[in-house]
Amino acid sequence: MKRFSLFAMFAAILFFVGCGGGGNKYDEYGDTGRDDDSADTVPDKDSSDTAEEPADSDTDADADARPDDDGGEEPEDNDSDADNSSSHNDFWSTCEGIIACTKGCVGDDSNCINSCYNRGSDEEQLYYRRWRECFNEKCAENKTAECSAEQCAEWDELCKVAEAFEYNLDIPAPYGNVNFAGDFSFILNNGYPTAESQISLKGFVSGKISSTPITPGGTIISFVRTTNDQLEGNVVEVYQLPYNIEAKKPENPVVILRIKTDSAVEGTHNVGVKEGIEAKLIVVDVDSQFNILCHHAFGIGSFKIDKAVIETGSAGTLNLSQGSAELFNPQNIPELGGDATEILGVSSCSIIQ
Image 1 (spheres, one colour):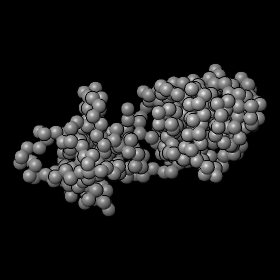
Image 2 (cartoon, helix red, strand yellow; image 1 turned 90 degrees about the horizontal axis):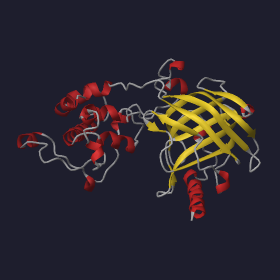
Image 3 (spheres, rainbow, N blue to C red; image 1 turned 135 degrees about the horizontal axis):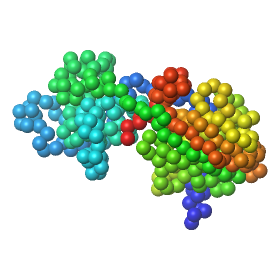
Image 4 (tube, helix red, strand yellow; image 1 turned 45 degrees about the vertical axis):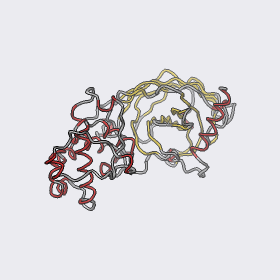
């Protein structure tokens, strides 16, 4: 049964990445770019799935004065106790906190936006929905705090929109850390695994990114491939990604160690963020075609290659050990002067935990 499920897994991976003729964005260290108005995007939702409003959210007088909730665009509700528990910081349970949190989301990342929304209390979720309806309608061409205050005064005041728009996430540096250890006995030629012998079911890095384990529970797939990068030339890439067996698809975050082929030899090697470095380590979210959506972190540190035979197929070998790296969110990399999103040409994944 294990072998059958693994081969089904490989088929799903191939379907996941598609046969798109090498349109893999891992060949760039850029991404699809971040929409500065990302907080202004809420996933579409069928009106039949409208979140329930608490019975005591509005008094009769307020209900007359406030617009009806018509089931327009809004995040999905999550009824789990954890989403509205008192363990969450009080700020993130407010309408202001919901808006501030979504400013850390990338584009129309509905999972991120819904996660922010579901941290709000029932009442604050209602305020957020009412404010969002007004803001989307009356400030579509001028998505500013000034327009919100002028056109949506009642909800703007309740949600403290100006403060929410100006909220800056306090991103620590370093942002996490990892250790290296991995043995690979197959190297792919610019492709993806199609057989059990081509992968390892263990990760090659372990540690945390922010407060989250970089290797979540469940199935982990890692593999090595050679490819040609537009910036670095010929490189060896080591991938690590979670795999959802029930959904039969890879998930995020994805870890990539990219080593210049000439540097993929026995010995100790540096990973970093500056040009000319022999290896780079990134933690990213990707879409269904493996296009990079955003970067959680870049690694700075070192690792050791115990054995390297860079040949494609079963003759290829790569063994990593005895190394570690500190992780830095692109919004705070002291080595690059702090916020390095423009320098690196990337966008940052939401770091709200």
